Image (cartoon, rainbow, N blue to C red; front, side, top):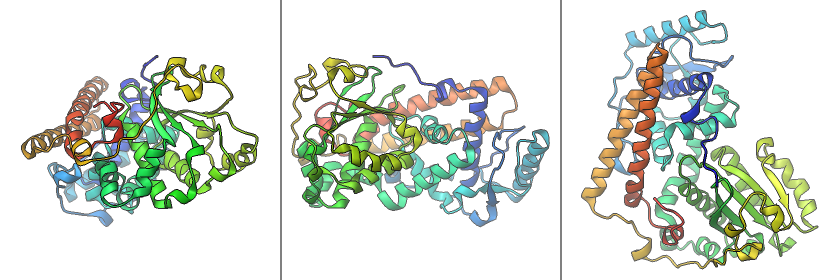
Length: 432
């Protein structure tokens, strides 16, 4: 298995890619009210869309420990004089580099206009697990071909979806135990069915997510329960990722599939989730042992796919085809592999599925440590954006990378204080 860092990550950015990341962070931080005064051209986009910042004026404020925020009021906010200086700086950028087109007014990016400035970064930090913050943002940037405007729009839509629509972070923190408490039996029954499970790794060290549609029957659960199950499986899969591995391989095993198992709405939901809210999370998708009746279904489904996602799909028929992507000892017996593991669901209970850390003092200590690291990261990010010196920029980038490693280490402990244990913690598939 190979685990080399793929290109386009913070560990190996080209100079132009680094400028795009700086510009992205500049807009996010400026929107959130931080003083950011870049020197020289940052932008490589030709049409930076913006709206006046006055529409988003707000007082500083911190979040609570439950939101993972609480530090965003600690940096100095822009005064009117400072905003005028920033406007002049941005205007000078446009004069220095014709490809940079900024308004001479102090602006925030149009993509962020509908969001609450006090909540965006809190929601962002809440979405961070063991990810490096830069690499989570770079998922959106790569998905939009290094276009800052489109990347910001995608990011803003996803943050809004997490905050207002899916509430996926709360769903993950509650896990199966909370679903059971709320009487969401259809969520639990889907875990029991084994219709989707995480087990094994491919030749590149990516976790395997195996979907078996033959175990799906539309009447067995509500649409809401299907969506909650899908999001939990995606988030559990995220928790199995460790730098430099940042994507999964998905096998759709269609053996035994009939039209009685077909359900278009969950397919649409899954496609939208991956494309809009979990970009660059799919390594390869293998459609395995598709029966002839799938041909008509595929003609419909392929039209819903983004070209990037479609390019990652491969059809496989037998074990030899699978072995091009996955070692045989990583494939379970029902896929004709050598792994004799058999999935068995463990019913949630308070003892095994509750929080791993219940001591309030330890929880508070971990939260304060995390908040301090977030504060240091924001401070270094502002310095990194503002510096006019290339060598200083390189040094600050490495310092930021080290802080991100510390944030990952912190999350390995902090996770136990905020997230109920899942079936995959109990099976030691999630190892934090």
